[in-house]
Image (cartoon, rainbow, N blue to C red; front, side):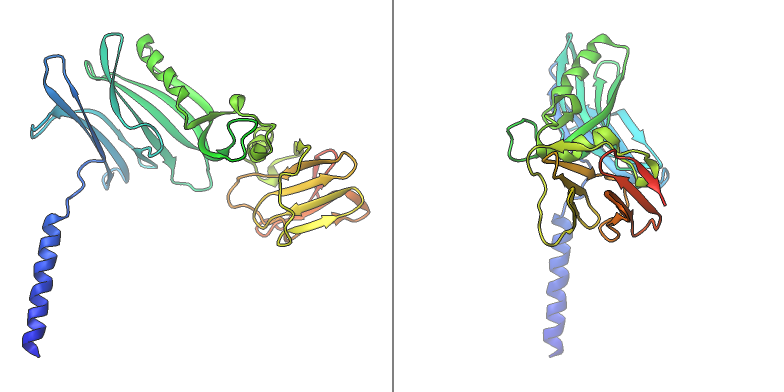
Amino acid sequence: MWYRFLCCVFLLMLSFAGWSQQKPTRKYAFRCEYLSENGKRMEILFRDSFSVANAGYSLRVILKEVEAESGDLIFSRDSSNRSFALSVEAPVPKVVEHCGKKYLQFWVESRRTDVTLLNSRLVAELVSLEDESVAELCLDGRRVNVAKTLHSRSTNRCFLVISQRLVTNDSCMQMVLNQLLETPYLAFYDKLPLENPLNYSVAWQKENGVVSLPDVNRVKFVYYAVPFFPLNPTSTSLENEFFKVVAHPYGEIYAFDKRKKKYFVVWASEWLPREDYSKGLAWKENAPKVLKLQGVYDQEIYYLDLETGEVTKE
């Protein structure tokens, strides 16, 4: 019995030793190669790891000859409150040539550690392989599902650009970075068909922003001529001679105006934590066109006029 037990332990030790030898240690997040002007094979390594010293993530980009033991650090980023990583959706790093010069082109993402702030930042980095100068295209925004054409029946996951900033004085580098704005993964308000009902949330947020109810005095409604929200029985709903209102737990509030024969978005903020207004949904007494709202987190009572969008407190 003991012999069998010892044999099993020995076999497990051999198996673990073999596994530990075969399992590679991830030393870099990505690598790419190119030929230099003198014909040498060069490689670029991206190392993205947590830095204890900086209490955050460190991104290091190293340029070296293929098979060489060491190389030169050509780009680095450290931060104590942001995480830098290669963006998984953006195009992979590559070496491009423009104006007779070679540049390393890649994307990084910086995301706030504070989860109550939904916006993140995508940065297109352009590094000169001649003098290691750096140019950046900074895009602030957030990931959303959008319909890119008016007749689309489905949405795509995109990075919706809220603002952008170009950081360089080099005209050649500016041209390269501006071309990246055509990346299919990016979406812009002025290029989206906001009249498409599939973009109701994006359209509402364009009008109102990412806000909480205590921060607004008036809500700007977004109207559609066709239904865009489900009237399923699991939702909380109210109905009178003027409106039908549907609210989802910790989600959006929609309504149908019976006189205008139009559907509209009452509330679609992405603010975290999202309030569950479906719990306190009711009509204001003696005011059939005014919603009474009370959240789970915020116990304040608010009144929202479905005609004017005016928000008042009790």
